[in-house]
Image (tube, rainbow over all chains, first blue to last red; front, side, top):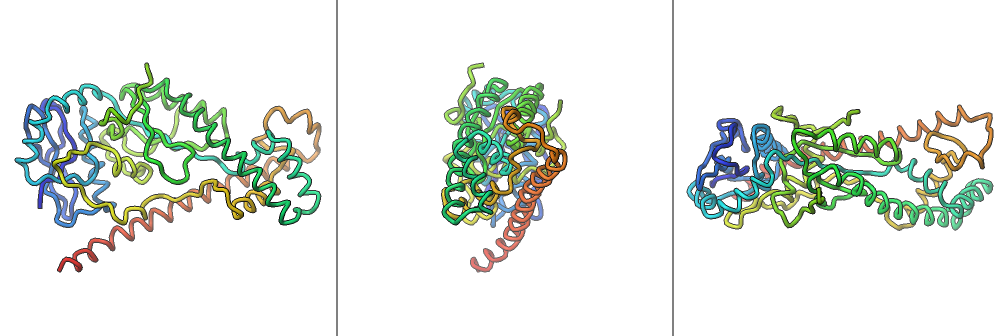
Length: 247
Length: 137
C-alpha cells in the first residue's frame, strides 16, 4: 500500500476531479491532498501496481479530467509515495518550483505529432528525384526484374535515398510546425516514426497547429501524420527537455 | 480546414489514442525523487513496432520489389517535374487507379499491425497480474 499520485495543481484549481474512479481494480477513488498552497490528485496505490492497460487509461483519464478545468502538472505513470503525509510534505518542500511550472504551463496543452512515410509514395518520390536509381529500376524492369545483384543495387540505392528523405522530412516538419507552438520537445524515440515531436500550444487556439499539419499533409502526400491531443503537458513539466520556439 | 485528432479531448475522457502516446505517459511527466516508481519490466511489448528503413539485404530486396511495382510514368504522387519526360500516355487514367490501390493497401497494413499490437498488449496486461501474485505467495 502507499499513495499513488496523478498530478499537482494549484489549490485554487477550479475543477479537481475528486471522487472519480482512479487506478486499481476495483478502482480507487481519487482524493485531493493539500500542502504548501498546492493540491495533489492521489488515491490508494494497489499492491500489485503494474503498467496495465486499465491503469494507464485511468491515469490518463484523471489527468484529462483535471486538465479540462485548469492547469495540472502530470506525474509520470506509476509514482507512489509512502503515504498522504509524505505527499503533503513534498508539496510544501518544493512549492516554489511547482508553482513556477504551473505558471509557465498555464492554459497550455500538449499535442503529439508522429510522422511516417507512406512507403510506396516515398519510393515513387525518390525514384523520380534520383536519376541513377530510376535508370537502374528501368533497366531491371526491361530485364524482367533483373538479377539478384541488380535487385540489391536498386534496393540499396532506394534505401539510402529513403533514409536521406527521412531525415530531411523530419527537419522540415519540425521547422514548419515549431513557429505555431510555444515550445517543442522531442518525444521519446520509438520505432517506426521518422519524427515524434510534442508541441506546447495555447488550449484556446489549437487550430493553428492543426492547420499547419494539414498544410504539410497536402504539400507532402508521402508523409502520414498522427496527431494526438490535447494532452496534459507531460513533455513540458521538465523545462530542460523542451526547446522554446522563440515565439 | 480540420485535422482528425485522436486521444483526449476536453473532459470527455476518450481513450482511443492512448496507445499512440504511451511513451509520453511512461517516459515523460513529473518525477519526484522521494516517490517510488512502478517497474516497467515487460512494457516493451506494448510498443507498436512498425518497420523502419534499415540497411539489410531483406530491406534491399523488398525495396527492389516495390520499385519494380511502381508506376514510373503516371500516378497521383508524380512530381510535377516529370511531366515533360513522360508526354502523352493513352493508359494514364487506368494506371492512376492502380497506384491508388497500392497506397490504400499500405495504409491497411499499418492499421492491421497497430490492431494486432494492441490486442497483444491487452492480453499480456491481463495475464501479468495473476502470474505476479502467484510468485509472491
